[in-house]
Amino acid sequence: MSTPYVLKRWEPEQPDFWRSEGSRIANRNLLISIPALMLAFSVWMLWSVVVVNLNKAGFSFTKNQMFWLTALPALSGATLRIFYSFLVPIFGGRRWTAISTASLLIPAFGMGFALRDTSTSYPTLLMLALLCGFGGGNFSSSMSNISFFFPKARKGLATGLNAGVGNLGVSVVQFITPLVISVGMFGALGGDGHSSTTAAGGTQTIWLQNAGFIWVPFILIASIAAWFGMNDIADAKASFADQAVIFRRKHNWLMCWLYLGTFGSFIGFSAGLALLTQSQFPNVNPTQYAFLGPLVGAAVRPIGGWISDKLGGACVTFWTFLLMILSVMGVMYFLPSSGNTGNFYGFLTMFIILFALTGIGNGSTFRMIPVIFLQERQHAAEKDETSQRRATLDGAKEAAAVLGFSGAVGAYGGFFIPKSFGTSIDMTGTPHAALAVFIAFYLSCLFVTWWWYSRRHAPMPC
Image (cartoon, rainbow, N blue to C red; front, side):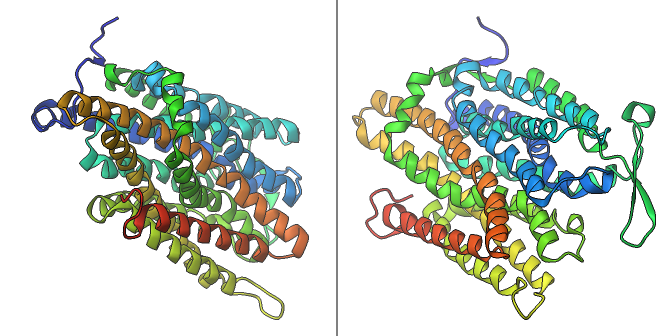
């Protein structure tokens, strides 16, 4: 059925079409997509800041239980991304963006009501942590959708802006939550606050439920904007069977590995840094600093895409992983160890640098994917105009599916990193063992990037 929201002709690689109407439509869809994705990240990472306030509000959970609450949203979000990766070509980008954004109301309302009552059971909170994964799932469908709208030469910046500003949702939730829980801003509708004793011996009242309720009006506005302001692309329609061809593509799995190293690190460190800080530097209030790393990482992601448009994604990715290895070594150097109490500001500085590198790597790896699959399909096709046009369309569809699927694999870092910290601390008393494992993994990413993409005469230079 034809509707004014469905684009029957979409040829962004044609200069005349792009100048006359394509650029305007693509930018409008991007401007609506960005705040919707930012809200998704905020809901996804809610628990990363809520957990450090649970016991202040009157709950009583162990450190291990709280690490589980921070890790489960990443686990469910990563799993949902696998399915969300393929839904835009099936349902259409406009429809799915509106539906998936509206789904964030479930965990937002759920957390608001559950956190009003300190007798809420731990299994109930675990279920709400899993439901926050709806926010994580949205990333794959959002990136898949936006990749269809822009020509090859602009994909790096466009996907970098969508993901980078969207990633700011992590920093926003970690900055906003401590502020909104300190005020009874919803009155009787929000419920009573929780009183607790401060470290100085005084009393304080916090409204932890505001951490969920604050997002409800913004989610409603973003859902309506997506439904009435975005577009579906008729040529982007594809069944799951059409998209499943990516599972036979070697470069799909290689890029999943690299994106696990970049985005997996970004979201994993975002989820675990506050609790790690609390465990290693108990005299520091982690909520005052936790938002800084994600803020920097999200802010530089578009820069990573833009630089990659100029220099090539593989070159940028290679140097990013090398510097990430050195940054993790720096984190280890400043951590407390036997005989010294560590240096918090050195630790924080190294983590901020690490976040910046993950942001650049996020942009560069997502710049690599469309180029790889477009080149692969064009090289395999006949050289006549019709075959090349079909190869361009097929390459765009495969790249969109890989963007979504690699985003799904990368998101598992949000589960493994905080759990690795928790396990390492439980078994050895320090997070050093986990950090050593991360260094070994980044070395493998460095080799994959060099061998297949960045070295001279690489099989797929990009």
